[in-house]
Image (cartoon, rainbow, N blue to C red; front, side, top):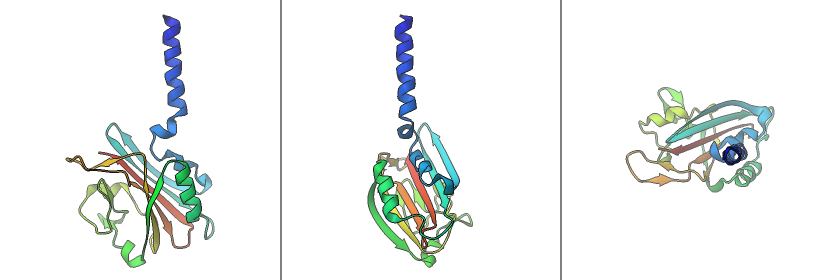
Length: 172
């Protein structure tokens, strides 16, 4: 009996160890150009979580959209859409007098609302940006409803491609 218990424990430990990247949403991004990673915000709980990771390169064009999309696809994120925003547009993304990325459980919105979820997504750079929206294997559920959204992973690239931020929100 002890042998069976030990085998079961060993099995669960192995599963946990080898599936870590699936257990922690978007953690695979920490492996992307790790030497340029500047800051990470991550919080996971029993009903959901959020992650924001910021990179800053040492020259222009460090982060190419092709490479970013390829890396995301390889890790289960599927490109859904892309958009460009001018300096004037992105500078309106303010919440509590701080620059943010306007992401909530209903998704990204260029028009700012009063939503406390925005505070989890700082915008570390300003100016003209390119935004890539991804469908992830995780769903964001609008609180108090059954509405879910799987297009909840985002990559923001600076105009000169030397700064990059990923944003991910999942759960309730």
